[in-house]
Length: 317
Image (cartoon, rainbow, N blue to C red; front, side, top):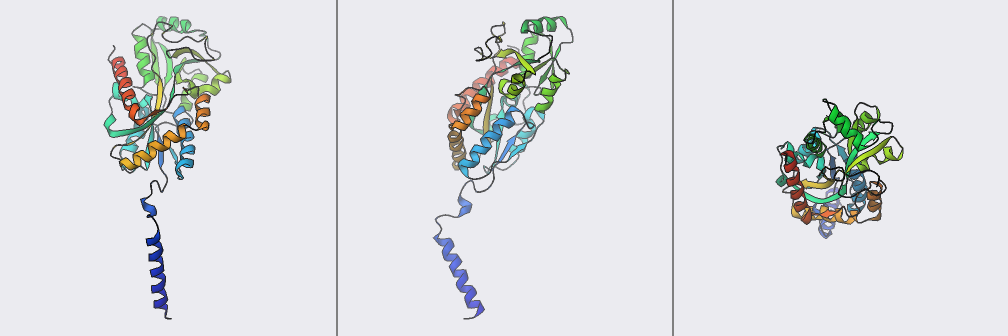
């Protein structure tokens, strides 16, 4: 048999093998890594949440979910990166309420209709923290000093336009003068307090749990409807006469116009992984609500409600 005859037979065999396959592998989604954008630096709560989900999603969908940190602009840089890419389901992002609040305070070029929420994956209270050796022993001490100091006490926050920033402006109306100092990198926020470059830190409770348990920081006020378990001696804002309880939430989003079939694969996978014991343990470690997950259908209405509340705060209501 000639070389060309053998080549023809081999080619026919390959064609038959391909035809026998139930589906082309290229039609299976996902069939390559899905980029997981975190619009914040490494080490913070958003980064920790994304890395936990990345690990679980990889096991669920059998492809990797590499985390890409894109800090800057109160999370705006990461949002722009995702929204400027294709709507092919191979790039998702974590949306923290720090960034979501920009729609109320400093409207960016993007809007809610530019993305699809695959689910809210974590909800936890925020609060003010001081260094362990701070002269401020109570929130009453902070109020007294902030009212007496015309320059205000310095507070490390995630960025201008964030819930941190909105809260500070709300307190200013009650004579409590605080000066926001933004840090895009979580580690810089924490070290600014520990290094006494600022007087206070605004943070979700789970982000700095190790500093609290290590007695380097201590909470002094929580923005929550109820006292925090394990910290019952720390007052809530409402108990202190301030009707502020903006929670920190984080959602996973994908660009609008992503094919519905791919959106379903992703949202179903997220629903599956947040129900796993490993994720429940993560929420426990973060002192987050065990009922944090909100599916796609209900997430939109909750987000609209939060946005309305933040717009009222931004407008001074």
